[in-house]
Image: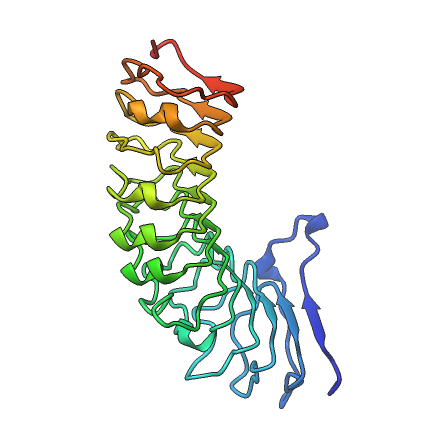
Length: 278
C-alpha cells in the first residue's frame, strides 16, 4: 500500500449498532503509507507510534475516541483541513505552530476540551485559517492571539455554555463574515466590535445574560442580526445598517422599545417580534 493516498474507515449505522461495538484491529507492525494525503477514520482510538502524518492534507476523525491527535513535535505544513468533531474524549489539541497552512478547523462537540492553545494565530505563518468551528466545547474564552487570524471568515462558539467573553484583539479580524455565539454565557460585546467591517451575520440567540448592545454603525455589511437575548433596547445606530435584511428579536422578554430610525434600512425584509416587544 505504499502508493495509497486516501484511506477512509467509517461506520454504517443503518442497523442501529452502537459505535463502541465496532473494533478494528491493525496487524502487528502495520504502517500508514508515508504518501497518505487524506485520512478519514471514525472511532479511531489512537494513532500508531510510527504514524507518519507529515504529508497529510486533510484529516477527518469525526466521532473518534482519541484524547490527543499525536504525541511529540511534528511538521504539518501541508495540512489544510482538520475535523475532530464530536470526539468527546479529546482533551488537548496540538500546538498550532505545526499547522501554518491550516484553512479549516472543526472541533465542535469535543465536550472534554477546556482550553485552546494560545499558539492559535500567534505566529505570522498562520494566515490561511478561514473557518473555526468551536461550538459545544468546554471553553470559557478565546486566547487573545486569535485576533491575529486575519483571514478568518467564520467563527462559531455556539452552545459553549461556559463561554463568557471575546478578547479585545478580536476586532483585528477584519475579514470575519459570520460570528455565531448562540446559547453562550456572554454578557456583552467588546467595545471595538464595530471594527469588524466585513461582518454579515451576528448570531446571539438564546444568550440569556446578554444585556448591552453597542454601536454597530461601522459594520456596514451586516445582513442578519439574530438577537433573542435579555436586551431592553437597540442602539439608534442600527438605522445605519442599510444592508440589514433580517433582525430577530423573538423571546426578548425585556425588550422595551425600538429606536428611532435615522437611516433608510432599505433592505430589511424579515423581522421577528413577540408580544413582549413594542
